[in-house]
Amino acid sequence: GELLMHRVVKTDLVLSRAPDPVKRNLVTAKGGAGGGARFRVVSYNVLAEIYATQQQYPYCDFWALSWDYRFQNILREIVDVSPDVVCLQEVQADHYE
Image (cartoon, rainbow, N blue to C red; front, side):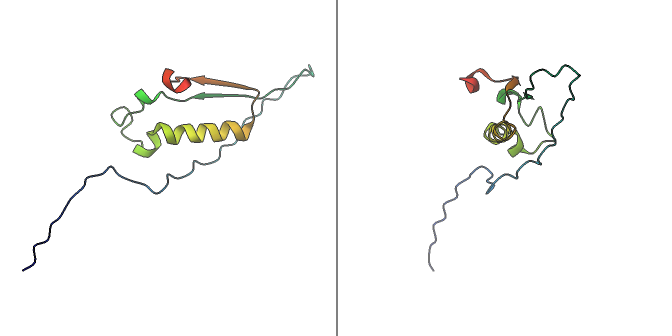
């Protein structure tokens, strides 16, 4: 008979592409009668990567916790909204640099 050599390589799970997040509706605060300058502010709690673990968030799909996935979606939304002021909370220091 013929001897077949098998080589098994273990890899991480692979998705062809994570799904796009649902586009969110923005909330517009109606100003008073002051008639001053208008500006747009966005604020995100980005959840530092070191805290985005399956142990901490077992109900969350692993791809949704990925910093690359979250970063690209936050960046896309910031660019789409074109804010004058951006506030970010829980930014991991090495991601800010």
